[in-house]
Image (cartoon, rainbow, N blue to C red; front, side, top):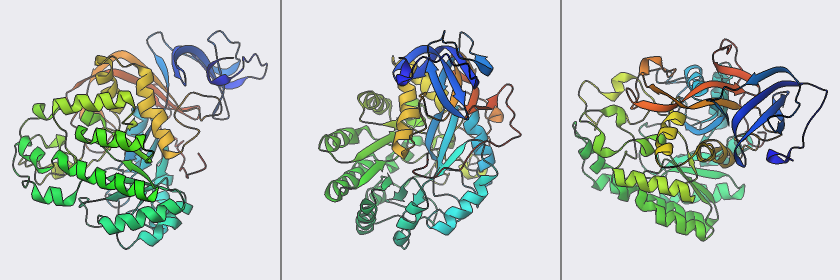
Length: 461
């Protein structure tokens, strides 16, 4: 037997495609092996010398590693309605170029937001003819629309997002404490998950008002306490109701003991963080560099290291991009004013290299990165056929050169707008090819004129 429990195959029936790799990351970690693909699925995972016959054989170079395609469950595509910020065409091209084969789209900042089944259908129609990777959808939970939650669930969204303070766009208002309680009780009735932007509005209101070019002033306007109080509220409601909750884009390391304690007690809470919180530090952000503005904010170096430790011990489950782009004018580079600039970091294409750059410096390996960026996000969304190189899974693969390197140039990214906090930053690891269900969708030789992505429905993946 070999990786994933697949028996040795010496079939005379050829596979459609076979990958041979001196290094691949499977469910049990790093190894060498051959991967046989038939009808878009992984049909065999065998030793490197297995006699797998195929119509086409892809031999990885000695400096390349075969990874599962990444799963990014936190992407703001903004299409339709704000397509000039980003769109399914450009977002999914960027995803493919970065080794991401599956994204789940957030219910804002598109117009209309995905808060009822009519809006979901509009979103699906918009995405259908622009999908270079597979796309799933989150629903939204907002005041006045809580009676739409069950319908959206039955229509196949992967869960529901809410805010506990102003979202940044008026059409997606926050839930107050009573509304959050009502929503969680509704979702617990059909075991759906609530994903929460956890910052407390009262704590933000009491903090200094953000203004000007000084990043320290902006950081003071979004204190750790705002995250900590909101996370405590969400955990307490989840404990009381028995609901499933997920904390989005954790930035405050102070909340980690609370999360760990709740999980030990059996509270159903999961947590994500993002590449920018693991890559950058508040101390290094220059005055007026609003490309670094996001909410919650990038915090201090000591905070960053505690987030890394929480990934290692499992308190934080996964890493996803929170790709939240906008047009350059909304970043207010003309004034550098953090108080009025749009908050969001564009990184969909860069997450794998950004995380690998930091992870290898701290002694983590590619198996860890795959766990955080492929397997765990897939599990979070309930995608049983995604996130690992295992028999029966979709043949979503990434050919990665971990010892290669590049300097980020926003003009060369597939994102719609040339804005990113990573511009000019050297990163380790290059995605050379990306494959979706056995079809190459990025890298030399890929036919990007054709669309191969599918629209995903909860329970069918």
